[in-house]
Length: 105
Image (cartoon, rainbow, N blue to C red; front, side):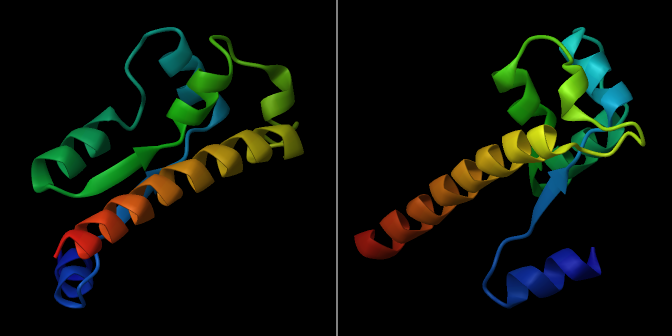
């Protein structure tokens, strides 16, 4: 709560990035609840914006792809690229909205 308050007092808005692991992503792609669903619910209730990295992978393929994660269950280069490209687009959209609101003033 303190971090959110301090960020907002500085004139910015916090955004939480949720990063799924391979098991959580498999749940999502199978249509089951994600392990961090309670956190998502809390963020939504608290009015804290969040981005769900699982959306990046779900947009790329309806099935979990073995090349998205390496043997240690971290994102592979391919998985990291999917996430980075998606995140860049999400952040661009947010910047564009802020600039549009600023221009409208």
